[in-house]
Length: 168
Image (tube, rainbow, N blue to C red):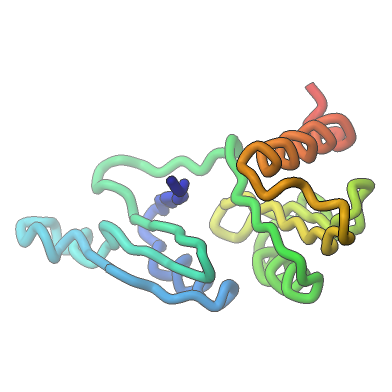
């Protein structure tokens, strides 16, 4: 099973995809436009993207300009989190996502040992960039789903207890 984020935008999906393609060095696939499937679509809607995919590494984002007549509302209830182990790459991604956006938390070394930052990009999408140093030999969690879930749970509990905006 794999969770794939599906991002909707108010008519600027092509710009967003091209920006993310550059940032993540990805490939755009399966671009379908509303006019390709419905010739009766109003002219101003025909070129809007009905569905597209961006792949990079083992990751995928899916995109749409949203259904005609249904407004898009950006929310703050979800963030896309990128985990890396290369600090230069993490800082580059953070800097590119920050261009024209708003830095919520600068990329800095954190108490849990990672370099971490949060940003809302110019398209209203919230990102968390986490760069973990390599785990020293002998300290690895077991390579099981249970071990991975424990690591994620432990990090979430640490975030919630130490980052003021997450304390309830």
